[in-house]
Length: 270
Image 1: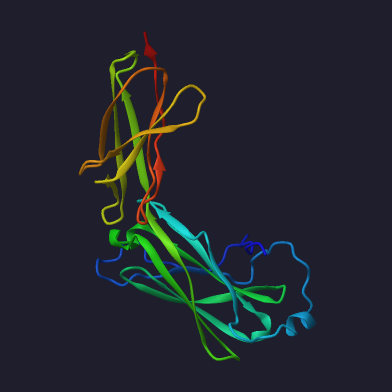
Image 2: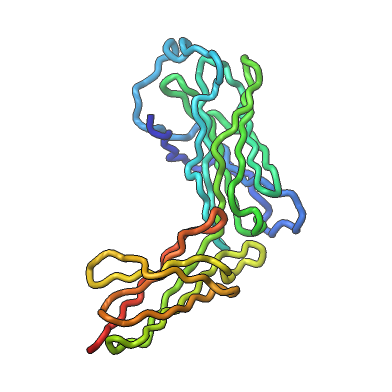
């Protein structure tokens, strides 16, 4: 079954205070509850009889997911994901609560039921993170756990983790331009990532970054790997033997977004 569509109309929000939270204060949830306004994927209508006939043995949770699962947070924009739980209609679930755990804080909140189809009840909540609510050390995997209560015994269900990454930027500058064939070409660059605590992009140190080259309309290939300095600077040299474009590519870390720079194309002359 495809993931449930969430074309959601505006919903009430529990807004985080506009000013940054004091360091050491518990993370506050910013959540917009889905208040029955979701538009589902086109699916066969489910009659009350069919829904009531759904059996309930074992886990009442059919599926959990987040759309999207990965949040890349820069220094200004708030990023949002929707946490969704599908429970079997016949299980008599009355409440679904979620707990999201970063490396430092736990957030708990209640999901709202917003749709029923194909013998499943859908519960959801939107969960938002602004840069000024985060510490840099919180980047990485966040645990998600759901508590389901109702006619059956309470049930705890662990879901796939959320990934929260610091946004990255990467540049490439090859020179001199133009360059004589056989001469040395220096390729510089800078790799930075969002510092959530001071709202700026700072150099990413000790990162392994690929220098790639493409001739004409061909595909990029990796020439070498360069390690960034303590300030995120990249610098290496290659022999100029033909026209083409250079770029740096960082494959990312669990905590940090992967990024590819814009290309810098060089004219090599005989």
